[in-house]
Amino acid sequence: MTRFASPLLFALALLVIARIVLVIRDRRQRFAAFPMSSLSLVAARRTMRVRLSSLPFILECLAALLLVVALARPQRVTRLATSDRYGIDIVIALDASGSMAAEDFKPRNRFAVAKDLIGDFIARRQDDRVGIVTFGGRAATRVPITFDREVAKAILEKAEIGDNGNGTAIGHAIATSVNRLRTSRSRTRVIILVTDGVNNAGSIEPLTAAQLATRSGIRIYTIGVGSRGRILMPRYRQNALTGDIEKYYDVVTGDLDEQTLAAIAKMTGGAYFRATDAATMGDILGRIDVLEKTRLSAPKSERIDELYLTPLILSLFLFALSLLLGETVLQKVPA
Image 1 (spheres, helix red, strand yellow):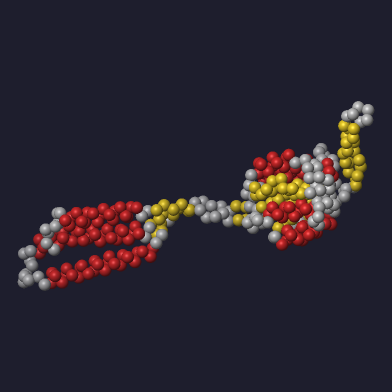
Image 2 (tube, rainbow, N blue to C red):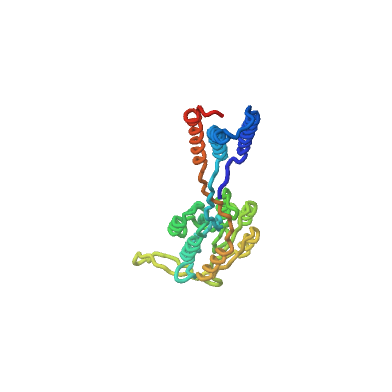
């Protein structure tokens, strides 16, 4: 596609046209006043001389018109292929409290399985920015919002149970995640909260933090982790005789506040899910992956090539040729 960057400058062409009209009218008046009663003998010769004498003027007018075209800046515009893309900002808040060591997500504990499945989830988010928050008795940002999925997965892999102290500060985890997303310019911002416990630490209540998310337009998906009924919780003790560290199991009852997690999700426009095993948790993350895709129009891209140089050079050439002919070859040819 060809366009002109300054099409209004074509108005200057009217000046050139006006000059042509004036010159033609002037010449007609001079020929009409020719003193001879008959032009039959000199008509052919005079016609040739008139044409020759007009050549510099014609070249000058063409040069002026080409200069106007150059000033209007012709451009060749090439539309580059664009496509719609999908992209949102996501913060994953992962519970790293001691209860995540429960081994009901065979063959490993809840925390190890959650890290693997979240890593797979991150790998699928090709056009998204992802951040990671881990929490126990306190919450901490492990990965700020980033497009670098490989770095996010590598840092997540290094997270360990107990890194954030004892307890489960769900409210603090939500508030920290909201703070990560608060300055985001994405049209869709999401928190995925993964926990297996009850809020028992931190100074922020979960529902209060959820209100902060709602006011910021952030949606929260909550995932309650853990099988129902009694579960095996690994413990460690030192053998009094050998000094070796031995592993044993306590049978405990799951302590998951599903009511609060469901209320958080409902308040923010998200959804609550219960993951009772590794397969279920994988399915839940897959469902969230499908639900949270926001269509964003990729910015239109185009390449612009300036074409004014050709008419400008041709205009200068014609001006020079007109001047040269007028001052040399046609200098003595009468008008």
